[in-house]
Length: 353
Image 1 (cartoon, rainbow, N blue to C red):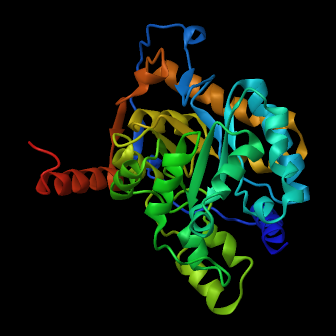
Image 2 (image 1 turned 120 degrees about the vertical axis):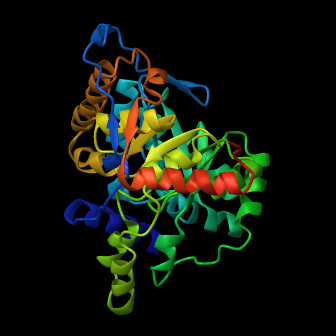
């Protein structure tokens, strides 16, 4: 019950308070405008293939919620929307339903209302350390196309009740990757994934990464609203901790197929992420309030993202999603990061010339 109540608390905080971190890195990315696109906007194809599924656009609704009775309607509305538009989504951490099976329908409702959509299950690596079989249970619960193993040690470290033993995580990931019947996505939850971690989880058998970078919802910020004293102050200190999303994308996209999550707030952001090398982009917070109202509200918010992406593709003369690759000008901190990382890789012998 403690986990379930915490999930409801998180939803309320995200609906009522400012919870976003600053600077995703996309502020330093400019898509290069083509004054003569030489194509018809109506002919643009936003479709992509991902893990055996055809998506109408490189857009997912990121893991958000579940594990509480009040979350069931949210997940239902999200599922109806992604099914209607041919997209995909992830469910929130399924830990609560593993602990209390009567809560499983707050997750399984997603597959019920989105029978054809790309759906990924979601469990924390800390839970795998306790019992690797929870991976199979999570996948079965939602008849998932993939499993996201989320890494949220920033949030755990600033929770009084957090799981802060990270020893053995790679071995646990490797065990799941070798035995699970569906692909595994390694997912951060707001602090970002570096190239070094991407290489490590690739070696462990992961099929993709969701960088979950800084710039979107700060789970340290969320915890500020539900803790007191020392923990509240530490939460404030780490509110903007992490690697910005765009930094993660340029770091990791040549290691594994990459989902850009963290600060994706429009179709332009989606286009920037794809241009930097991401395979897909996803977002959660913009869809939370619409999902508390109706599936049609979620559809309208998704259409805002999708049409913005189409316009960005048109204005960069990109007939397909792949055509967006590289059509960017990079400045500021992101440029400095690129130069620093390339220099480091060159000095270590990874990059020549």
